[in-house]
Image 1 (cartoon, rainbow, N blue to C red):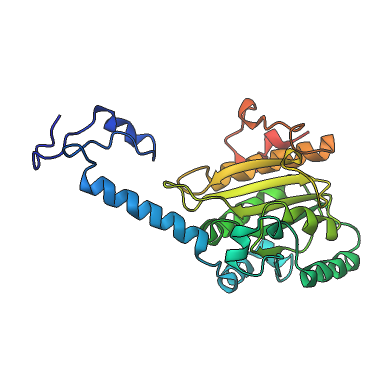
Image 2: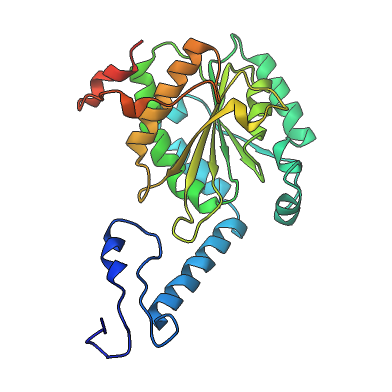
Amino acid sequence: MTDSRNGLVTENAWRRLRRYTDARIGLGRAGISLPTSELLAFQLAHARARDAVHFPLDVDRLVESLNSLGEVKALGVPVVLHSRAEDRFTYLQRPDLGRRLSEQGHERLVAAGQAKAPAADLAIVIVDGLSSSAVQNNVVPFLDRFLNDLGRASEGWQLAPLTIVQQGRVAIGDEVGNLLRARMVVVLIGERPGLSSPDSLGIYLTFGPEPGLSDACRNCISNVRPAGLSFDDASQRLLYLIREADRLRLSGVGLKDRTEEVVIEQDRASNTFLTR
């Protein structure tokens, strides 16, 4: 089928499916090549993905936004930390350095953990990861929803001081949670950008965090963003996993996300599916 607008572009019958997905299908062709519009769209998406990896997180703006949330204010001013990767180039070349805190950050959290009594139930760690835009755009609205839901669903939970880690990987949350003496740690991190998702936020839950744990010990909720998994749904899934991790005393491969098998009441205030 030829585009009647200019007679140059041959449309693809699969194009109608693009209303259901951001995947690049049904692009059509101009002669033996891609249409110019599709080629330019691909180059733009590629540039956005590269920018997401290399553009630094605006920590000051993030802290300012977090301080505007009433629930976050109760946790105090976020503690800003850094991994052992001194710069972005080192971070990308040495993933191992992004999994451990700098000496200064380690000492700071040791003091914070010793000063907090009793030990915390949950530590929340914000990490720039591989997409600063994912963190910059999605962490605040997600935490706004999650902390509200957490307050309604589980009274009496003790939260550790909120932390922000620059040049960090997922596993750095295990060290942070351990030093803060938290039973569980939730890591909010920018995921590796895709051509259709440069701003995807990942959420990782670990029970009994300590340095050296493998990915098999963590549960992951992926693609949290307005065009992916909604903040509401992500919050409900995380609350379910936290409750189950607390009940079973574990996380990772032994903890299955069964939220899709449970009938969720429309009235969010009831949080019926979260009750034990």
